[in-house]
Image 1: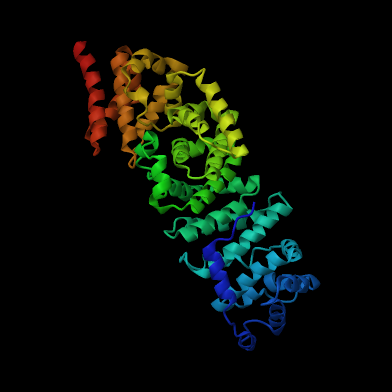
Image 2 (image 1 turned 90 degrees about the vertical axis):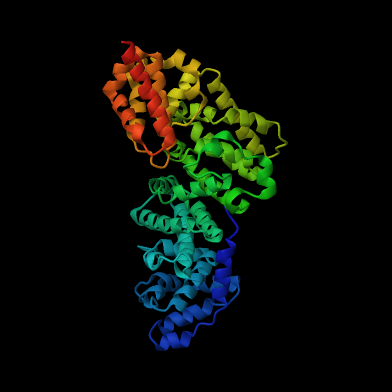
Length: 481
């Protein structure tokens, strides 16, 4: 999949190509050899076809120029202290591998084709330093081609991928959307194989989390403020006329969605984690409401299909997709004039998948899935007296008390950034005691009574109120006895 080169990077490379480099002085200073100089001059500032012919006629020499070998050190190693030379050579290296495919093949046959480049990724903490930025571009070309030539993984490739992911993650947390877009496009070029995607997921705190934050910014909702996502308050009109929230451009949005879509090819691996850690279902439901283009809608639908389809994900994720009001939104999408055939196919498949689920499921199933997922939200059952009247004893007894144990695990966490989860858990405990008072001993053994009493002094007002109400239910039945 080919994307247009990022404008920021393209401009930087063009500026460096235009700079004069005192090559003769570099030779006299011993920074580069006379042989290096001759090879550089033969391919510098010439037409692409001439460059390709020159490199093809002496591929081994140019391989040695960039990577080192029997003829001497790599020019990147010998000129390491000359920033101007390094910048120029990194741009030239990118031009050489793009214009001369035979050189790319030869480089990847080297025993360690990434070694001369990797140290430049970590030479500075400044995300705007051109050397790591230019290095990442060359490494992306090398690693992407390596995966295309041989999908099998190896230690050198995995190590280089991991280090490049780590560097690119520093760009995604930048306030500069141009740097963010460079990182995301390079991620997309790298996620070509199952192993690359698995490695990306294993580093998700660095790689995935910043991308999800960009998407949250686009819908105007931070992770600790879920009301916008769950209420669906943002209108399609506000997205198209005023632009996406937080200044997230359509191009950056598309590239982030593209990267998450590629990751979702490993749906069985990442699906439940994306929901548990990132609440991707309500987030993507809200993004579908806001989606300004068919191409972004297509990526959103396809990603959801990839993570909801695996049988290992269905019992956990389909109830949460229903709670996020995804089925109703899909029906709304069907009423629009959509033309993309892939989009329409995914829309129909996703609609059918959710229709099959909702036709056989109950509110209890939705509640159980939410508790088992380990994260509570103010979904309708929590405040529905009829739900608790009908289901309290089933919640306590089902599958040997699995749900109250899961609820206690949620209660035991601090939830410093999401106090609403604690408030909801206290609410649920209160309802269980109220509707099944004879079972309150079961909850006490799990530690629920002690925990809600402890939470009566929590700094959050909603937690204090819900814990007080829950303790009140215990006291009421104690007095009655």
